[in-house]
Length: 599
Ligand code: SER
Image (cartoon, rainbow, N blue to C red; front, side, top):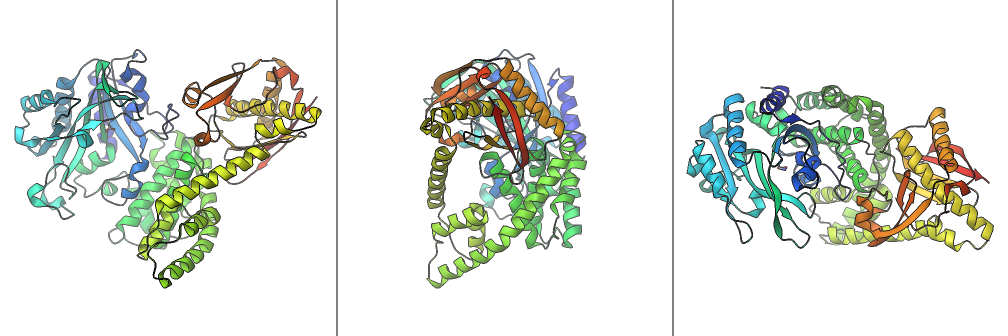
């Protein structure tokens, strides 16, 4: 049964049981405190938490997910960064009885799995939340004998919340016993069963009974309704149904695996780890770019850059030819666009970005590798085991080596790197560069301008910068993020994430929109609030992790909302006429606009 059938059967099964089919949400979640969408339930949090009345009582979906926590595990049989999650939900409608019964109906009745190979786990209880005896009884009533129902604690059988607070609950995981021949790793046979990592038992579905809410003080309270949230990884389920040793041998990955083999002239069988890492990461990168993420030094962009750099580095270990990211990306786009059309829409962006990153990384990698070899030699000669953190940071800062890359290279030579010292250096560096940026460009330097006329003009340009960002987002899309800003009394300079040159029409539209907002003479309101509330209210932030607890939020009519230190004019009408002087590249995936105002 191929993956398309697996997906289709799942969705149809729940559709016939009155579930509304909800399209996958973006990999960038609505909650700005969370980096990626990592579970199907994320888009339903307002319904699960009781914040919003659900418009339908039951839902099902196949959802794009991305989990950074598993990057280092990629290369084994079943782990991924990007994956698709199949799921069904009840928002205060059905609960354990139906969720459990239907899961077996689907697995055994539709997918044809053998019931006597199914094992399940349930929550064994703790001081806060009692043991899930109800689920044990339901599983037994549905024909799963007590000896195949195991009990585990919080770590394994309690799911959520996604952020620090929110809906969560005990869960019941379904495992499939694939038999001896799938045991690819040694294990303690006397203890082998669900949870053992030898490959014989595979977790295929997680049923979460969401009736709790975790609070800020880490206590649990009951949610207004009893909900169901389930998730089954499509890749894993397909591998089990196709009796494949790993997800990478299913039709979801075969086209990529074949292409990697064709390009490198190497066999998958002898190079499983690099093949799997390349396939996983290039697929994930395409999906991230399609959702508007660009490689950068921070946050999501940093993760994307790290993935692409790992693809290139592992590509080298199997002699992949130059420019291999493009043909691999094309496979992902062709294979998935019928379900995720954003890949086709963003085809140009994807191909341009992966190519740019490859070229850029090639250059720095060569220099960096030389440097690393020198450092490693020096460390070994000095009889040391740890690479000096100063060097690790230097490799990051000057040669673009992600920390993890240096760690991997060091490990290959039997050396260690100290992550804590690196992170400390990294933080310090950010503080210094932020202070520099503030001094040079930020609000404070406007306060410091002595000449009153120049100060007023810079303030106007500052407000115009906010209008410009909002206009860019409205016209080009919400992927636009500030990447830098510089204001002097003559002009503003604004750098932002966008993959290609703006057309003449786009520039005109942006300019006109800013001028229209100036004409509307919108009031500028300033409020003080916690950083968290500012983000929740939709305010844009630039140096996300470096803001103080209480921030100022500047709102311009209904058009723009940003966290900012000021100063700004009182009404947009004070600005004068806005004029874009220049639009050009400011690095891969970054554009720069210089503009001024005519008073
Ligand atoms: N939220 C649960 C999970 O991610 C079930 O979908 O496993």
